[in-house]
Image (cartoon, rainbow, N blue to C red):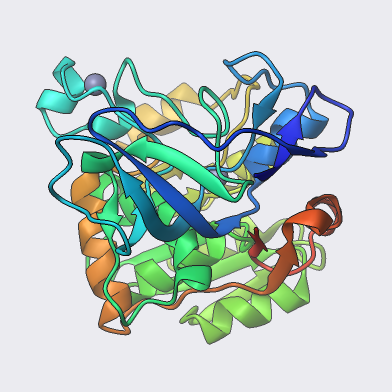
Length: 338
Ligand SMILES: [Zn+2]
Ligand SMILES: [Zn+2]
């Protein structure tokens, strides 16, 4: 089968012919309909963030497709079923899995990081961790549920616990942040979107943001927000993973509010401790999404309460062009079609 293989930071992905994965007991083989291009892939390719499995490795962790084969003992899915592979595979037997927090499983494995992923014609996965997709959800767009939609859902609903009527600031309205905007709006929040791109801010308004601010024209926007909201927002979600943006999000939170760190960064972050203490602020991390959240998101998409925002499609042979477009910040979410 054709696959886009990672050989190390600083090199483009190489298109190669590799063997189709063998499925064992409890596993399934997914014929990939589409796999999303994510900033995590750029972190491996450009920033030397090590994948835990040594290259060569097939990247891609946001996949939907059709079940092509099932191993022995598989009962939840059958050949021909449309299915979604989660972006993180869990062990099911650690204290976090036992408490429903599979997304922080201590033995988790990530496709396209610890095991071969889905920038390929086929990918294999544990069948009981894959989700059957209803016929109303198209597979090419539906793949973004695996990460771009479930990750911000967990951030907004489970971690920030956004309530109707609250004011929610989303800093960074790209592939993940834009979905934090539409999910917070769907929860009944008043959403303010911040970005450097007018095009992405336009998208944010289309997705339910009540107002938007371009941080390029208003670099001191936390002050503007505190003034407009009588002291600050209830929840600020930083969806980029940039220190300056994290500090601006922190500076926008009202007394008693919550700062949610959704964007990935390996840098330290210095926050004023007295501000956190005196104002009873909460600083909350968020990672991926547990299986129950996937189920809820799939339902919301099926019912038309959440949109699948895919703005570009690339054949597998053009995957490096798709990654270049992501580097340039074009569009919201692109997918690769093997
Ligand atoms: Zn991702
Ligand atoms: Zn576990």
